[in-house]
Image (cartoon, rainbow, N blue to C red; front, side):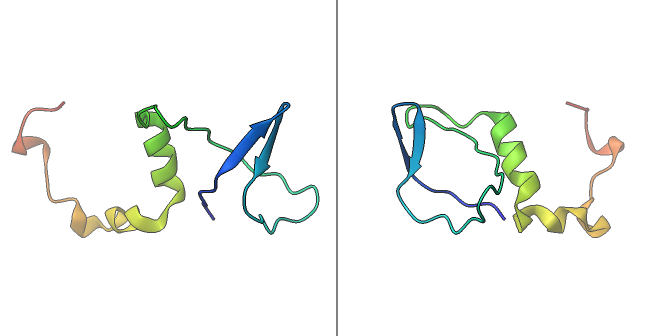
Length: 73
């Protein structure tokens, strides 16, 4: 499950501003986005892979284009 939460960085430690509801010693993966940064394409792709919003694209009916529809990019 993907979640977004705010944290503060103090003395080398990330401190969440909300309760995490994680088991003791549970490992998680953190993606750090600084406020003034644009979201890099790799981060967008990683988020899309973990989010169910794009599952509809796996439906063969969504693949409506062929190589004859235009030039490859």
